Image (cartoon, rainbow, N blue to C red; front, side):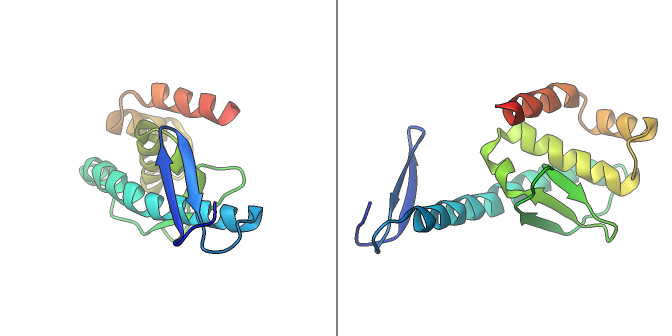
Length: 141
């Protein structure tokens, strides 16, 4: 919708996007992505701080956190020790965000999905299986 300002609002599950210019699919898409990115910056930092507090008790140091669009993953842990979260993850429930963050934090101590990795993940998040199952259901939709 064309208006006097650029804005994105989510009301009752519907997005209301206003642009100063004639709204085109590309412009609307850019506005929506910017809104998701702003929201992700805030929410991911909040969730990251909570998850990191538990992980630090297991000797996991604070990594850099990055956000970008990813084709096939919810998150990744790089060799330089940084963690990247998929921008699309912002559309998932906070429990799912916590699962992905905790999963990636565990990779800082245990790089591979071996028994020690899953033991550490369960220690940090005893109900991780439920959260992972929910995320998988969401991804399948």
